[in-house]
Structures are given as C-alpha cells and as structure tokens.
Length: 490
Length: 97
Image (cartoon, rainbow over all chains, first blue to last red):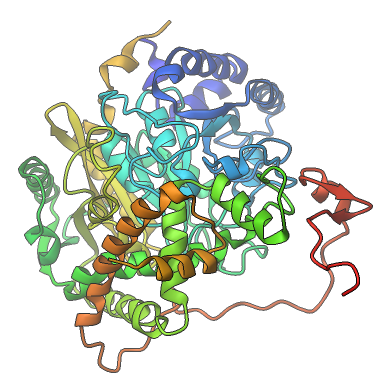
C-alpha cells in the first residue's frame, strides 16, 4: 500500500520540500484514486482536474523557489458550499446546479494563497441541511466503511473522501454537527471552530448565527495545520472575530496531566447504543491514563436544545434562502405565467424536500402570532444553554461527549422520518447554539463501523482541544485505521 | 393535523407552491415537526433574555465609504434572462393601469 495514503500533512509537506515527489505527482495520485472510488462513493460533485494540475504545477514552482508555506502543494477536497470563482458551486441543490460564482469565498482564497491544490467540490446534504448526505440533488454519498451505510451529513462527501483517502484533507461546515457527525461516522478527525473564527464570506448561508467552516482530516495535527491557514479576521464577514490566530500546528507538545474533562450528566444519561457507551468509557479510561481528571458537570437546558435549534435554524434558513427566486441566478422554471409563479414554481422545482420543509417551518415560527411562542422562546433556551456551558467551563477545561447515539445508520433508514433524523443530532447542536469549538475524534468501532467522540471547549480554545486530542491520538491508533476498500492502490 | 388552509398560508409565506401530490406528505411532516418543536411551550422561561448572537457580540459597522466596484456584467453573466442590464421577469403591471 502506498504510504501516501496514510502520511500526515506535515510529512507530505516535508516530502514535497525535499522533492521526494512533486505536487503534480501527488495530485495525479489522488485524482487517480478519485477516478477509482468516486463512482461508488459519490463523494465529489465536480472534479476540478485541470485546475488542480495547474495549481500543482504552480505549487511545484513555488517550492522550487523557496516561497512555499507548510501547505503548499498539498491536495484537498472542498465542500461544495464554499464559492469558487469561475467554477460551479451547487450546494448540493438543483437550484444552484448551474451557478458559477463570480467570487471566491475567503476560505477558498486563503487555501489558494497557501498554495493548496483543490481536487474538486464535495457532495453534501442540500444547503447543508441534513445528517446523512441523502438529501443531495446529486445523489447520496456512501460510507467507505460500508457502502450500505450513510457517511453522515451534511459534510458527508468530505468525510467519505478523507476516510477513503481519496483526498488527504477536506473542508466542511458545521451548523448543527455537520463536520463532527460525518467525521464520527467515517472514522476521521473533524474540527468545528468557535463561531467567528473562520470567515463565512462566500460560504453559502444556511443559518447565519450557527454556521461555521472547518476541517475534516486524518488527524488532529492535520486539522491544526489547516485551521491555522483558514482562520482569521475578515472584514468582509461582519460576524468575523478579531482574535489572533495561534500557531495551532506548533502547540501540540504541552502536557495535559491534571486537565479536567467534564462529563455532562445529561449526555451520559441519554439514550445511546451500548457500543457507543463502551467506546466512550474506553476513551475516558485513556484520558485517565494520560493524567486527566474526570469531573461530572450539569447542562440542565440540554433537553430543549433540539427543538430550540430546529426553530432557530429553520427561521434563519427561511430568511437566507429567500434569495433563491429564479430572478438573478440559479434555477428558473420554464414559461412562468406571472412574477409570483416565477418565484414559487422556481423555488418549488429547484429546492429539495427537506429544504422546503425547513423553509416552511421557519416561515411559520417567524409569522405573526407565533414569533414570541417559538422563535423568541427558542432564543431564550439558547441563552440558558450558553449559561450552562459557561458555568461548566468554570469547573472544567474541556467537555467529553458522544457525537451520535449510534454509529452510521443504513441508507434509507431515517430518510422518511424527519423528526427521527433530527433526534440523532442530540449531542452536537448545543455546541452550535453556544458558538463553542468542538473536535471530533475517532475512538473505536461498533461492528466494523467507526464510533467517534467529541471534545468541546470554551470559546477560542481550539489550541487546548488540539493538545488534548493530539495526546489521545499519540496513545491510540483509531485515526490510523483504513476502511478495507481504501487499501487498494492502482 | 395541520389543516390545508394553514398549510397554504405557510407555503405562501415561504414563497412555495405545493403540487397536489405533495400536500399530504408535507402536511404530515409539518404536523410532526411542529408538534416536536412545540414542546418548548411547556417550559417557563422566567425572565431569561433571548440570545441572538452565540458570542453576545453586537453587529460590527464600518465607515460609510464606497468599497465595491460596479460589476454588473460579471454578476449578470449567470442570470437566467437579462437585457440592457436589467433582469427580465414576467410583466407585473397591466397595460392601462
């Protein structure tokens, strides 16, 4: 098996610098793997082959001239919710299936400036709404660990691409768990940064007070390298926070002995599969061996997090998606009979079932007579959740939690029951309501399917999460496991 | 179960037109979802204030200076139908009104 499949980004970077192989060779290697595996996995909506090879060639020249960064020449997969100028950005939707963005997202610009090579745009639940990647106009993504199972969502394409090693790393977005849950289902590492840490300019909006861009990669070390390049203040994003970006990749060697790890009673009392509980207990034992101290914490408002989230997210999405009206860009219905028909039929034909459901729920909860009862009330729950986490972080340094009550479920198992699907977000969404960072780590298996855990930190504590997670990954090898299908090298 | 009049009102607010075969599944799904999120009504919020921003920050403003350049041609390049710099839509004003 080629060692390029399992080498971390730092190793790839050194190998490129000492000319063990070129970026062009490395990029072609991953493009070949995409050709081999994408037909079955459906991770990519578009493969930007020519652009990738052009970027790789430029990267090789930069490296030769000594003008490179640690990420120069390294290929990545880009979630198709980030605008990329001159290419199609679909958001997994028929509405934008022909949308060519006139500008790059700030994340795209930053990764371009770092010299990274974009292999293509990855599949996702439509407009990031979903937890299984079954809601894409471009078809479901399949989990490389078992093609009958979902990879999770909404960043399912990115997670599956990294798990199958058809990309060494990928971007994702997380509004209610959409980096962490697919990371857990696919056995990869994922970071959802603090709200405002990564610019949302050019990241097509689902729920503006919850969305955050992040990374899926093979390890904590890789996530740290990429976040260092992606994070930072952006004056084009009015919610971007002017907070210095630490050298995440260089801060992984500290000691974690004595750190306090919180265990929320509400999470560990909740329904989760026995296999998930067993994996979490083993992880906790590992943290104890590393010198961490477990502390019980209470987050009493968590029981209302899911309904609060779906009210707030739906309300914000109904506003954000009002722009898709068939007038200025995107899908337009044929032969509109009137302006109103143009709007409603373009939207009805261009948007998928789950997206339309959430827009309608959002319109309902914001409507006259219901705003106070639903939206305002949900924002009060949000306040309480923030207060609960604030109190918890007075007692602990980080919180350990499951990511999902189960490992990956079968394709089709929950797709006809939206509420059942929403309930599976129980462990992830409170983090988004509070704007906190969270790191998902592979932690074990349940009958050959990966099980993940997450470490939740206080605002802007990504450095600490990376330190704890890195120590865990030095002591275990769950993050090094490959699905059997990925071991084939042509 | 949500009635069809209410469903029609919500669809109207959402800028959607439901096809006849969509009505019953959407009615069922929305009834379930609204019942699920409605559990918030059972809890007393006391004097808790709403939280709009996850980090409790205020909207940042910038100086009142023009920073964008005119890019009409580029921005309209992907539009469904344009003419002379205008986006074309069905007529909204009846002749003689």
